[in-house]
Image (tube, rainbow, N blue to C red):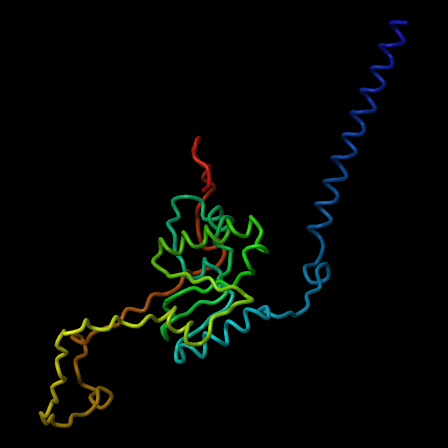
Length: 236
């Protein structure tokens, strides 16, 4: 009886080992076949809209509110935020960098002035979406970029949007004398423009610094390895 039990255990163990080996070989074959699939043939692409209906309405409202400014849509945060690469840049991208700002208000030099997020009502927003928005707001606040949240079924009017992103300067208090502008009656002699002065020394001219965006939305251009978090520290 004992010999029969030992033989049964050996047979079951052998069958289990054989099953595990076959399962591992099937996984390897699947991964290899996925790597050999052509990108276009395996995942045939089709064009779709960039913005939802609410985002298109928000874009139209913002463009009427601040004419003359540059408005970009669905911009990854990694495109206009720079972070130190002493820690893993890939980990930062995973946490936040790949998320997109719905609308980005810029001046004509593409300097970011404000970010507008269009979201569903609070009762329709998932817990994961709420945490994602809070994380984005925290990062933008640290970068000094205002973030405005618009509800898709209660978008602001043109005037309200203008006041929100471009607040007016406070009016002077009552009784404060307002200096009258002094007319400049001096007659300045006409002079040629710098384009008409080929021998002009322009070294003393004021130069405007134009900051370039990060070189890549992804992490191909960054040489930073994985940096595991320290014990006791968790993502907030």
